[in-house]
Image (cartoon, rainbow, N blue to C red; front, top):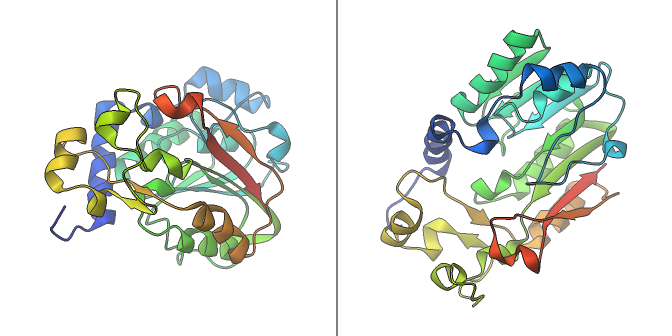
Length: 256
């Protein structure tokens, strides 16, 4: 894409449209699922298929939770139903509408705020005990500010859980990849804006698909350590629609 793009504005509009399309990450949880969550029976996903281990959660009663770039009623309502005081922070108003819908329907303690995940200036230092950050930083060019801001607003001794894609997913020639041929074409970090022409991106994904970016492990993991977080757990997941999943996985980490 040769022209300058406001990534935040573009992806806001793109994710608003994903809600209209019924993207799986935008579908509100059901009343039955919330009823179970009130009893402590729930699972949340940071990555496509494997639930977060229950041992990664702090005590949720009155816990101050930030669901960071996780609108769409996928995580926040479960945590609120379990007793947490939840703030959902997301760039897409339509994604936030899904959380508002469930909060009103189920009388849950959820605050929704629109904003860019790299800028948490709306929150004071040490505002939250628990941060939930699913796979979403693939939609921003620079992930390092996310870790720095998350550490700033996280209370000392608090926990953050995050999910992200193995960056090798962004390295392959996409046409060959669709044929099951894994030929490296792109260097990391990857960007839809610089690695593809606008014609290539539109032809492959359509004009309204969110812009994506692939970050190095140095930025994804090393960036968290540099921000002051400590990694205390790790697991891998698979993305069943990705051909490479037979060989590599998606990554999830809890930090303190």
